[in-house]
Image 1 (cartoon, one colour):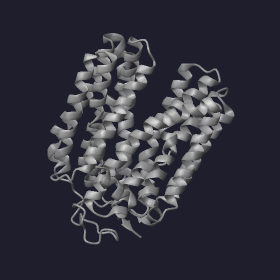
Image 2 (cartoon, rainbow, N blue to C red):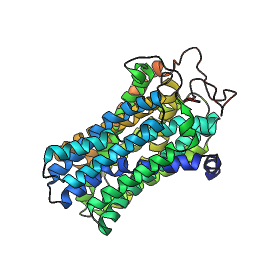
Image 3 (cartoon, rainbow, N blue to C red):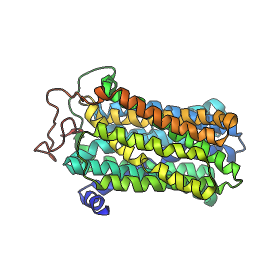
Length: 419
């Protein structure tokens, strides 16, 4: 299982690109919790902390596809690094200005969120040129999804450690400075400097003119809702059992399940249409969410959480394959960024829905939101399977690159070309 990932990481530039992207995305993974800790450390209310974190999240959701389109048009170095620097300056402004002047505080977090560089979409656009063959790229998507789960688990722990050692302000500054260094490592690499998007048709909708991509985004909005609701439901479950540590155990179990699922998924050489495979994965994802509504004791609930996490990383990895097949030529980074944004927006909606669900029906009802989200995602994929079955990338669907001169990738798969 690990052999395939080692083979990928041995490819020139692969380990650097993966590590740089993960480090560069630390501010995104830790932004909300860092903002909350900063505001609370300065004596601000939970309401203000939550509002500032929400503005950061909304701005991030808006900025990702816009910056992704800019990357497709102008290349990675000219967009990713300046965006990372501006985002970090927004965080610096928040630390310096504090929350005494609220318009300035809200403006600072909006800048920090809006200019978060689309490193995740950028990395997935680079993999075909770095790795070449379709199977290796698919495995890289799975490895990337697993690494992302680790980052979103370790990142908040790193923030709390920095707060304990220094202060919330220092934690926010260190995380953002580290993010800039990660982005710098990526954009100085040869693949990032050489990458150019395929020629694109000018259209104001960009990637969103693809019906298949719209169908996929509709499904993953509900996946995001499921993920967001689990966060709130996990807190409610921990409250029911009177121990804050229970929440940590549940989230760790979800992460462990995703780690195992992503590792197994990446080790398999899959055949057949990824759209059909994605429907099966989402069906299993929904099926594994439903038992969470039983809310048994802490130990069995931790086991259920681990099972519920198994199909998350495979779902994300497979979704990025489908995105690449359906994104119009020259819009692949934007299309990847739209998927990231959609999941984030869905997670915010899931958080908003799960709160009232806890108050009205208890913890079990909040976990039911996750199950309903998974089922809704499956229904969208089933209802749109004819659209998803026919990716349209034009008559010259296969783009040959220097790393794939024979067109080894499946039709519609290649993400760009070398300059």
